[in-house]
Length: 281
Ligand code: IPE
Ligand code: IPE
Ligand code: MG
Image (cartoon, rainbow, N blue to C red; front, top):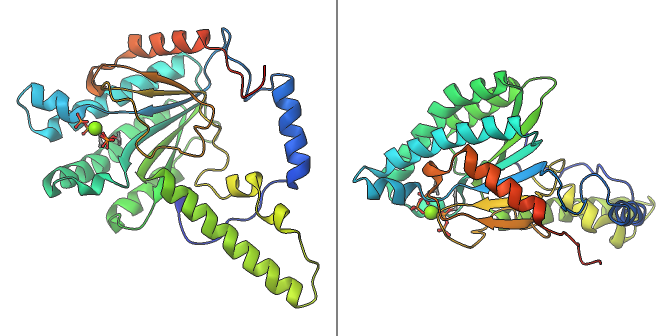
């Protein structure tokens, strides 16, 4: 259950903040690997808000579950194309922390579909070299589904070509709150150590950008270079609030089940025309 949130504080995995900051500044200055300006560049880190399943079904007078099923097929196609295009990470929004507000029968159908997809689609993409990792909170998720998520993650390829992060029971604010809680626990432990005669670490070192990032659900996830949202809605809906700080945004009017490989190609082509500045010149 790798990246699903637990209340355990995460170990610090980064160097002291000032050193890291200097490293980041140097990387930005020379157009380093993860933050290079687009200008014809390939997109390696992609995020997708797969929206519009409900409308797709309604337009066909089908039950909403049929829209979600068609959406799962569209995801399979997207992953295949992303692999072909050399994308290294794809983070998809599959169920938000707010989606529990939907009618019980829709939520039930979605949970059944997730179980089915974990049993069929996940092994399929893993055999294509895709590592699958779930990000989100565990609370509220059925034990049966959590067990399948754990089992799926345990079956990941050892030398993956791509990582698919599946945001499930995910909220960007939850993620930041969970990270803040983990940091608060670190600070409390450090205070107790200092009170017991240990060396005191400065607060700016304990609570800084790098320390917070290290407490996110998947600290190794790169900030997405491009976010695609389908269905014509132009909002973030609580997705990757921390990670999207400088992400290029691309909105497609297509409903998610209709979003095909050519649409991904078009989004990637648009990305390549964007000039990324990260606040600089
Ligand atoms: C996205 O499609 C899938 C989930 C939120 C699980 P929607 O179900 O939100 O589709 P619309 O927005 O109602 O058309
Ligand atoms: C975002 O879509 C969540 C997923 C795609 C899983 P929503 O349909 O839930 O977002 P809103 O309600 O239109 O903002
Ligand atoms: Mg929607």
